[in-house]
Length: 189
Image (cartoon, rainbow, N blue to C red; front, side, top):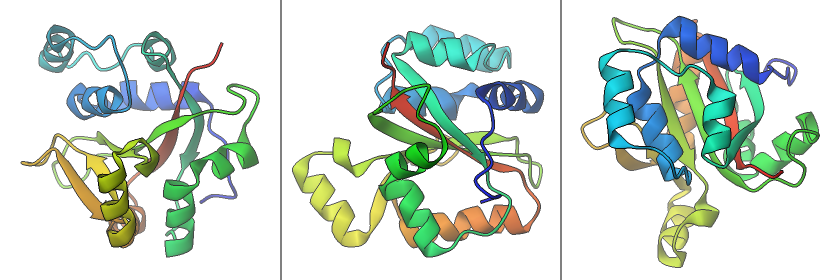
């Protein structure tokens, strides 16, 4: 992580607009994280028109969610760094930003990827184990895995180990592809 540089939410919004990220993965991730006002018609229309996301902060607020922290990942991550980001994101939030949403409930992490090998930029969601059923939580902990939301794959919801997540992120980072991490929390007034 680049010296824990905090990126304002506005940078993420601009990044999504500039890169014209298809909304399918983003919408599916937000829905899995507890978004409540997503309608299939809106998803299809924004995808068909490639309208992107006009105002991410307002959109998330309408879903009862907010971005607590956004980080650009530009150095390879160790296993311990990846594990800390995925399993104790509140520590990352506390280290970097507490004023926007004090004592947040983390509902997921979004990873945004830049364009690569004729693939459009996209967003992948990782869900926290704490929101899973007891049985699933036990299985995920035993396998050292997390649930991932990625509609660009044949199976859009799957599990992935921390090791595989770290390796995949590092492949992008080492190949000079823009990667950023965004911690999504339940919005508190």
